[in-house]
Length: 117
Image (cartoon, rainbow, N blue to C red; front, side, top):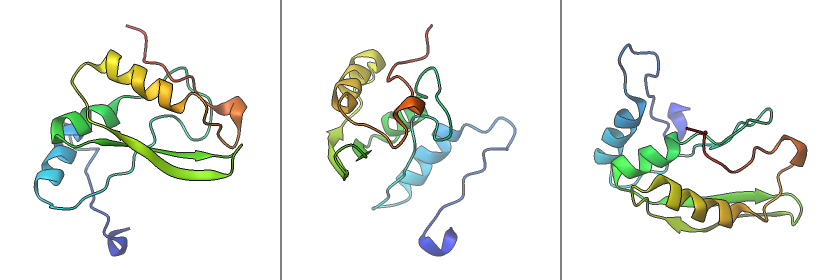
């Protein structure tokens, strides 16, 4: 992936803070796109992971609300959300945006919700 411009991040390093590593990489580049799937891609998960949110918050960058909607045969970016630090409120906006998007295998789509506390 390096030949495509990929930047390696060491997730195995003891005590490594992946979110901080990504934020530092953003600080080192004028132009950078990071693609992160918020939900599992192979099977249904009980909730979405939030690493993408905390990476954007710490790096002070917006989250592109990208999608692939198989029911409409559409791909796109429908807008941007700048994380406010209020995860629950921001997640409600994300949930509302994705409410009508349908994945390739709807039965495997994870509910758009946070991990219960």
